[in-house]
Length: 132
Image (cartoon, rainbow, N blue to C red; front, side, top):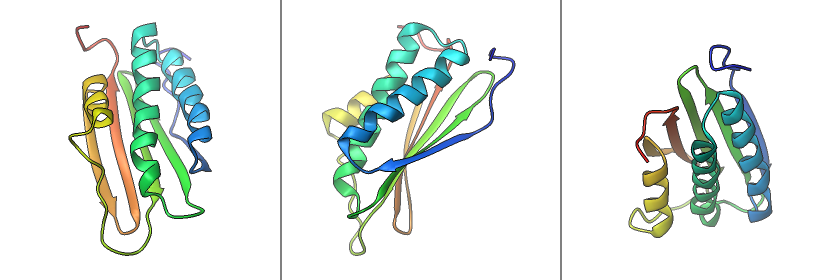
């Protein structure tokens, strides 16, 4: 697939466990490679998706699924990683944590999205737009 032939959205739901993050890393790497991201950009996306999952997993309800929706385009990739959270007062990831700082530094945008019992991190990265 070339960057001019971006695939449609891909969604993957796995158990909300740290072991499942390897599958999300593999999928984002494969999609980014197909979109002609550089090796450094692919590594950045793999790390960002891993960190997003790591930030969300402590908030996941028992038996929750870790879901990742990948939205490729000709110029970049948007990824939304989410979990279902338990009922009760909303818990928020620590935006001053090292993991959050890594997310912000490796992506063009990072947004925390909460909708009912769903907690998500929406990340985007444009191909070739960042000076490294």
